[in-house]
Image (cartoon, rainbow, N blue to C red; front, side):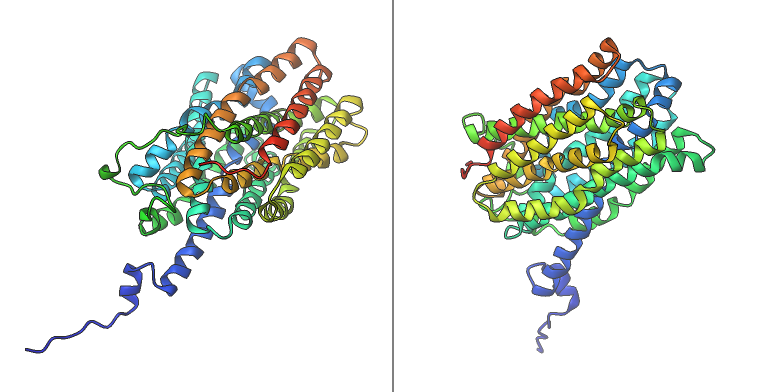
Length: 422
């Protein structure tokens, strides 16, 4: 009998992602998938700000309800984000991100078809639920597939995130104009863009080796055998560092969603045209494209990130002061200052990846810090909207934002200390 030995070839390499060639292709696919999904994590929110006045008029939305609308992202991230670790253990992080991205696409396509405020809010929440899952799991995917490049890869996908936010803010009004001035079409276009991010994650989910890595370097393997596992807050509530990260994340999120939801309106109330207001907001996001990468890469090489958190807080305070004193005098300067301050988001993500000892810890820390943080941030946009409507101006809301920025600065000092969780 002749026994034929099978010579490993390209098909065998495809089945064994541990081989160098397959591993390189998998990492390349992971980079593409990260960039595409990150690009689509903010258009659901940033596309609305430039056409918020038109949407409020068409839907009969009050200022307080509009403030609630800007709080919906934080609410979804807080409530849905806690489910991400359990879903990741059962199905694998990549598969869950793929499903979440598909939910984003469907929600954004259907949202413009809503005829009333309630349905508009519901479809916004549906899309944001998918974003919430991806928000929590992307730091885990980075820690899992790029354990030696946490800062660099976090900076890379933060660049894509800020680019998506900026493009959506700047392009929604022109897109609406291209469709005859209809704001609904300008919003719905971003659902098509989100759909483009789904296929790479489906392909990545089929490569299960990384998702089945040992617990010491990853989340527990998917499947019934993994069991329910520890909750997202397991061991986190006893860690001062975890609470500091949650507070920092929540305060920066509250400030970010005020900027996303209300900054264009601030400039419009100062007498600037809608297109210019959208461009000014786009500047705040566009600055994050180069700054996010540089800042995350720098933070990843430092043992302490407290100094960076303090510097970003000072930029935010200066931006609020400018808007309070003379919003129309130097709007581009105020936009730049707030754009720099918004880089606290990639800093928070980088610190989450650095504070966790391994991926199993990072998935719990990410879920705890983001869910708790977003829960803390929920009242901020709503309060700003209510104060704006009550006082008929932006000075009182800006004072509130400045006070919260001081608290964020203090939380950043504590979160940036050289401490490990888990």
